[in-house]
Length: 147
Image 1: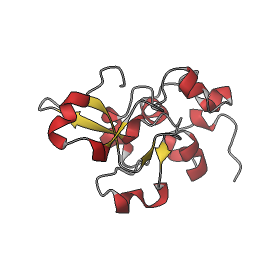
Image 2: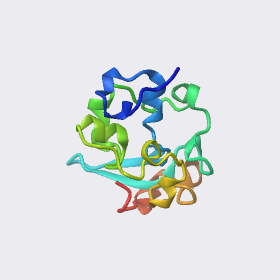
Image 3: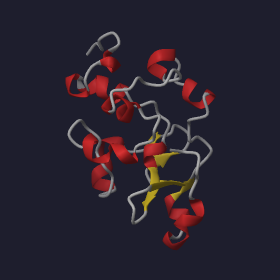
């Protein structure tokens, strides 16, 4: 299916499935474990989901991720209002939900999937696998500059 020109400026509920998927910049931040405190504040860790591929910054088994990781949140136009607050501030889904433009380094604007890494937003080489960290040590992996 052909994507419409500048489809990323359209309302999210007007996007086709391929257009929706193309909004993802591939930073990998949504695949990081997040901690929420009693006040509802979200802290990002450098701990990646067990399905996360650190070389591609993508899910290693995207089609069946929900079955393999029951806690995985499937992001769509219906679930976005409930979870936008924990998405990265640079996330195109969150930005469009907040009626803001996508970042100028986004691959849809640059035509280059490497622009995410060049802008310093890719998690390539910056994560530790979930199975390598004991749950009681999660707080030791909080990273302040990821949101």
